[in-house]
Each structure stands twice: as C-alpha cells, then as structure tokens.
Length: 108
Image (cartoon, rainbow, N blue to C red; front, top):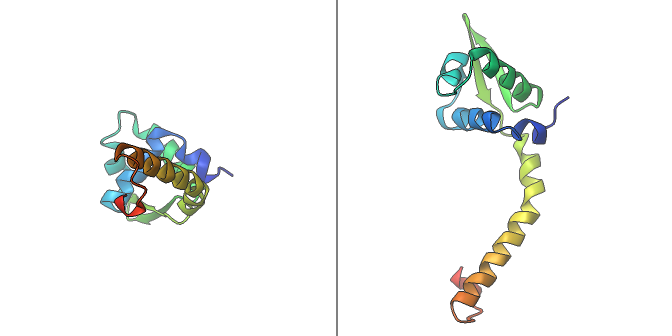
C-alpha cells in the first residue's frame, strides 16, 4: 500500500489534490485538462492517490467522479506540526531582532 507521504511527494499529485480541493468532485476529463500529460498518465496518478486513501472514486453514468478525502492528510499535518512551530519561533526571533530587541510576543 502506498502511504500518504509517498502519494503527496509528487508535484502532479499535489496539483490534482489542490484542483479537487478548490473545485470539488471532478471527472477525469476535468482533472486532465490543465495538466500537460495524457489522460492515461493522469489515471495512473489518480490510482496512487486512491490507493493512499486521498481520493474517492464514484461512478455516475459513464463517468468516474473523483473527490478529495482530506482525512489522511492529517498524518502529514501532525508530522509537520513540530517543524511549523520551530519556524514560527525562528520568525518571531527574527522579528524581535528587526524591531530592535523588543521581546513582546504580541508583535507577531
């Protein structure tokens, strides 16, 4: 099974996820349109995303509709949280330095 990290490592798959997040459930045709690759290549990326649990595919008539499932991204968010906190602290120290040493944390 492909894990979430492996699935989102590819920029094309991240682009597909963003497209689904912003535009809602979409057909393969709609997902393929903005991408500079064949429909078959997009289908392979969708299979990886589906295997990782990041999208759900439903059939409506002759079309397959793909929908974002954001819940598995919580794993990525939880893993990144400590790094985000570290960057927040570094940015706060930089701002404090640039403000002449004022150590008031409300200046964030």
